[in-house]
Image 1 (cartoon, rainbow, N blue to C red):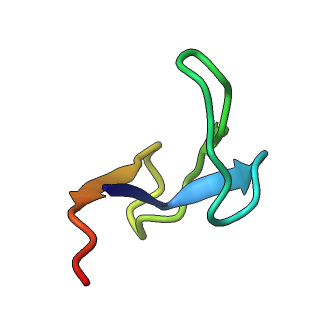
Image 2: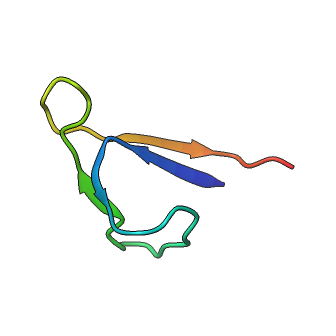
Image 3: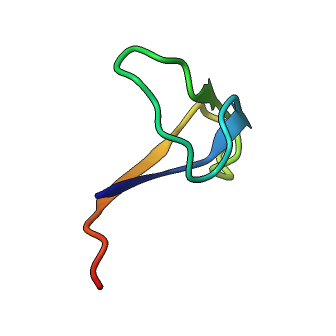
Length: 48
């Protein structure tokens, strides 16, 4: 499984890094186009 985050203000970990529960991975950004804080989150099942 892999998680994907979009609309971050900044990321504090590298792509592909394993993280622990409670670890800060980034900050919410104002990048959704409407000027409000937002975040996009996906959980993807990796195949193959």
